Length: 188
Image (cartoon, rainbow, N blue to C red; front, side, top):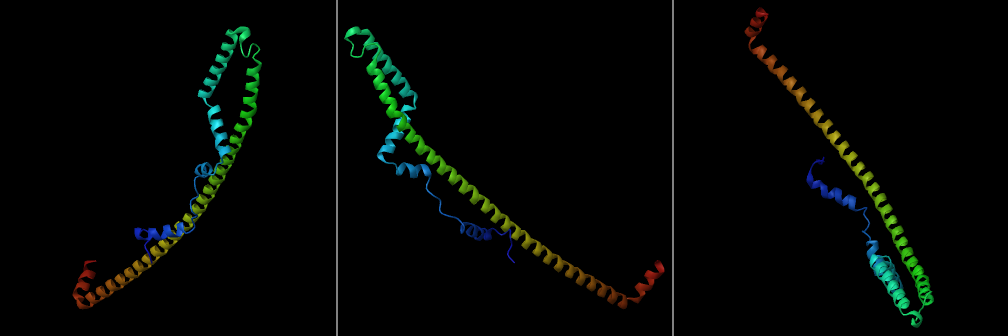
C-alpha cells in the first residue's frame, strides 16, 4: 500500500488534478485591444483624452483665449459677443463627443461583463478543485486508517505471539527448575 506522505506520489496527484484543467484563456484586455477596429481605437482615444485634466485645462484655456480675443477686438472681432460661432462649435463638439464616449463606455461594459464571466468560471473551477481535493484527502485518510488498522492487527498478533512465547518459556523454566518453584511458594 502506498505511503500517502511520500513526496514521490505528489506528481501523480498533480497529474490527476491537471487532467481536468482547461487551457488558460488569453487575458480579456489583451484580446480586446488586439481585436479593436480603427473606429474603436479612435473612440477609446477620445474618451481617454476628453476625460483627463489636461483636456479640461486646455479646453477652458482655449475658451478663455477665444473670448478674450473677441472681446478685445470689439466690432472687428470675427465672433463678437454673444459668441454665436463659439456656441456652434461647442454644440458640435458635444454632439460628436458624447456618442464617441458612449461607444467607448459600451465596449468597456462588454469587457467588464467578460471579466465577470471569467471570474465566475475561475470561482466554479476553484470550487470543483476544492471538492476534488477534499475527495483526494478523504481517500488518503481512509488509506491511512486502513494502514493503521493493519499495523494494529500486526502488533496484536506480535503481542499474542510474545505472550505465548513468554508463557512457554516460563513453563519450560518451571519444568527445568522445580526447586525454584517450591522456594517461591514457601516465600509467599
